[in-house]
Image (tube, rainbow, N blue to C red; front, side, top):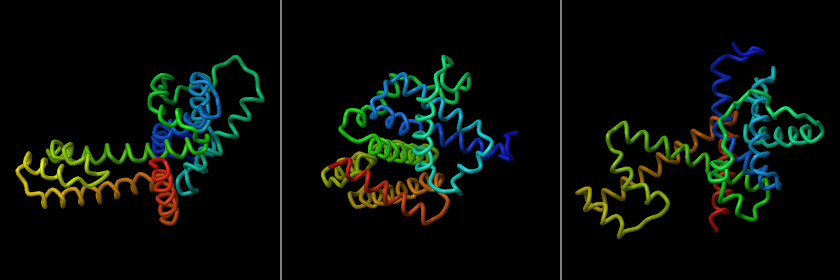
Amino acid sequence: MASGGITADSRQALETLCQTYWSPLYAYLRRTGITPEESKDLVQGFLARLLERDDLATVGPEKGRFRTYLLAGLRNFLVSERRRSSAQKRGGHAQILSLDSEEAERICGTDLASERTPEAAFDRRWAETILERALAALRAEHEAKGKVQAYDQLKPFLSGDDEGGYARVAAELRMSTGTIAVAVHRLRARLRDLIRHEVARTVGSEGDVDAEMRTLMTVWTSGNR
């Protein structure tokens, strides 16, 4: 049973959030000039400390935006780590995540290669993670319905219309182009719902969800210019 009155379910939810959002933290550290190996250790140590604290209840979505809390917490952790000198590996023996520096570099590669500020790299990777999770959930839904082939053919249209592409897929699926257009419209609507669901897991109110959705769209739009 988790300490400090935290239930097993709430702790599991927090662990899931940590597993989901480690890459934005990693991207932030790397853009500050920290090496891949040290960034990996710092993320591991920060998340380990986060999960070991007795006041875990203060970081739940009901208390505010988890994204904002994470970045502020990482900054404070970085300051405290720089003040202390210890031969012990950051995070002790608590391996919260199985992180590999090379894999982390691959995942965050685009953000690290850009000229973004550390904060912008963090937000960009956060937006990408939200979209990745929503797309994975959308594909899983189609797999469950035995429609994964149709999903894979329609997925390229999620980012834009292509009448010529509609005709090609319509012929392959033996449907009309109008039917394909409707299917794409519904797919986009469902993706928006799933993105909103992912965002809602990390905030405390509908107002916060709306604000984070606006932030996500701003980050995504600016990153694709």
